[in-house]
Length: 417
Image 1 (cartoon, rainbow, N blue to C red):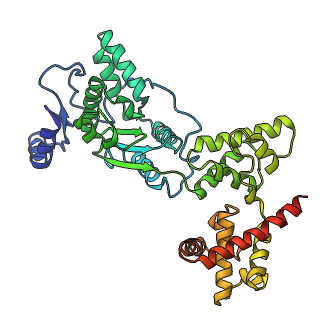
Image 2: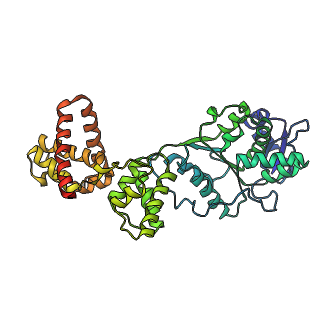
């Protein structure tokens, strides 16, 4: 590897795009060996973040040999195997997995953002575990820890050691980068480290609660660097994903909560996975300590101080009761709902059943498909979406569903008594 020092990223990109091939051919011709050429940022004036230049044998496989001391440890529970993939996080998950197979070349940096409790930290730790298992050097730090260590290094006149430590990583993982807002000198230092790592094909992963452009008081150069690779967002987890996450958490706790309890929880805690898992932990602990069966009554009691007392009561209807009520309302036989019949009345009744199972009982698409004779989730999704759209423009349908719900409530009350 032949490393050429350049003063800034612009010149590095200009040389790489126009002269890289020529320089490589010339060096190969002179040395008789296949030479790889890299461009490393080397500012012309001394900077607080500068360190002595790299040796000519830089790169992931042959740079500093001493181990990197992590700023904090990887969480053993946060792995790719334990990460539940859904539509809300599929892109970020796929990109995270891909950079562990081809670091420094695909998406560099990989920038993952999302609200609290959507899985950013889980993915970052999963990346760390995967590459650490391959013998690569991983350094994980929050932006706050990076800042604190930088300030200490400045005070103790150990900036060279600080910079050397961070640039010696094969994978640099920086959590909550929005913390750097307004910290110009720290931003400048991180940018220098990013440039060094980038030029040596080392991978960077950054997380935040917002996209790069939305971070205030951050230099244009750093924002540009953060956007250079792939920016992937983690959206709020959809119902299917929340249910899958909760089932996985229940398995970890060696518990098997009833389906209605799981559905109740995923409808009450829709945006934050930590809150959702915390609610399950609370219910399970309450059950174990009190020796009480884990059911809907215990669930609502144990969560009474954080959710309304009557919340989720409509989620306790059995699928069979809903199907029977709908079939009777539309004057068809029960079996028609699970059959392949396509007459107009049966199709409408079937789609209303899908809607009620989804909205009233909070069933997942696959679960509804199984209840209604083994239909696939796309059919169920289409049926639910059609009824939802019709409700906006069809007062007769709104009235029908209202009457069906009113029919269900007395039955539930009588069964409870």
